[in-house]
Length: 302
Image (cartoon, rainbow, N blue to C red; front, side, top):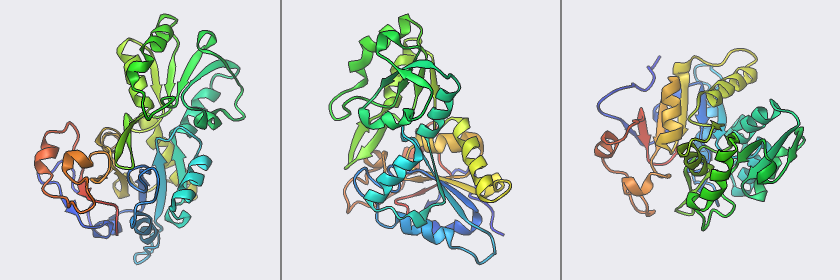
């Protein structure tokens, strides 16, 4: 049996395709935005790679894929979006989102007065919860799902609002720890930036999603449910993502082997912005990062 991708090696391997290591794993925890789609359409080949992984059966082992997303909405809403982008449902077994984890956190405080800081499109995160949605001044807790207009706003636009929450010591749940995501080759600010700004002025923030441990505990519990028992051994789990700060750092801290997709939010830093660009030597760039992946792949392909 092959060994998992080596950890803590000087030379980080670059894979041409998932097939090079697929037989080493029983479960893939796969990021969504930047790996499976770019915010408008599915990445060609990514869904097929996951389907091929799920269909591996040469050694009689059942392969599973759980999509783990920092999207600030329940999984069912994310599935609708994936359908619209053309990501095949056959590519995965289940979806776990930051929105799902946020709902669990909110449910721990029934009847609480919640202020939603974020766009209306994320309001489904509160569906059927025992809470009262209120204005800033009445809030017991603030749930941040993003910027009201992520096309033009920055965290600076929220300084005054955050200062008001800080004076009243209002705790925040960040429903999307991402700082940015890629949309049509542009980096779009996320809730993580607002949460970061709040934490910088002493605000109390609870993060729901990657890179924090609870999301991996929830994902492995889900894997166990899918298998009718326990989750796979951690050495036979592969985390795939495009963000060092969340996808790679979170998996590494939990002890999960991981694979960085280069053509995502780090594409410009790695020089693979244009469609004709190819991934070169990433060793120098990775050497300057606080977190290093176990392996790199340009795109998620088989």
